[in-house]
Image 1 (cartoon, rainbow, N blue to C red):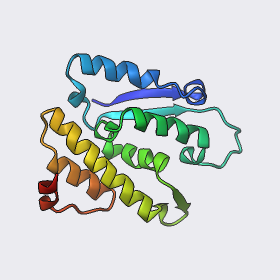
Image 2: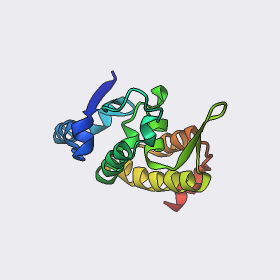
Image 3: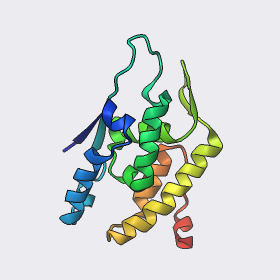
Image 4: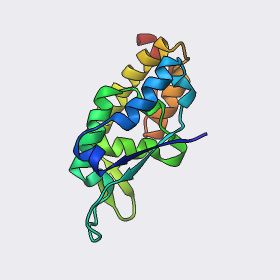
Length: 157
């Protein structure tokens, strides 16, 4: 079942993570955070001019909110609904990119590589703390972002 968190202009402009914090804290108390695996979506209700052509990930205030979110909850990609494209949108909030009319979003390759590897390290440790197997999950996430991780890589961790 998909869980949606709505963030609005006030949340964004005040860097207020309370819509996420409330959900995360209640799940952590119940030791049920893993139950939200790949089920979280963000609804972004941000006021802007009707003729503003920017994608949400091009708006500095929204990106800053997501940077704060990622700093507080670096394991957030585990919860995101990958199938609906939520992981790609999250990455776009954190990794420099450009939009191309034909090819779609194009991430800066070096920045994306750094982001992916940082998330692999963070999630590997976090999933281990949660008592969850991680290798196949992390390989799937990396693959979604265009990277292949050899199974032997995890022996280093």
